[in-house]
Length: 113
Image 1 (spheres, rainbow, N blue to C red):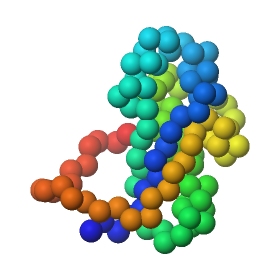
Image 2 (cartoon, one colour; image 1 turned 180 degrees about the horizontal axis):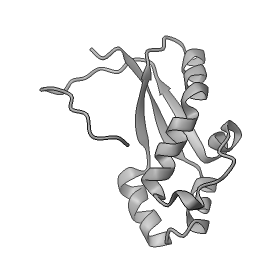
Image 3 (cartoon, helix red, strand yellow; image 1 turned 180 degrees about the vertical axis):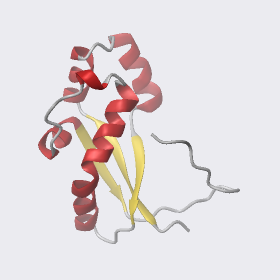
């Protein structure tokens, strides 16, 4: 068993609006939404929803950067004020307290994100 919890990050309409302004075409956005609309991030183990909320507040900058990079790699168009308020307007967060690994074999890590 992994000693982790997880959060599922979804995208609000305001995020997709920013993508359009940042130069991503509607067609590319729609295609990506079908294959990568949500992402799962492993976080330290949490027992209660309040703990997950606290961890997300601590880690939101990292999650924010990763989400921006997944959709718009050009950092020059990223927002200057990527604060927690903007994070909560652009993303939905669903907490999962228990993460089980039902896969076989070793968990392999990719290079830096």
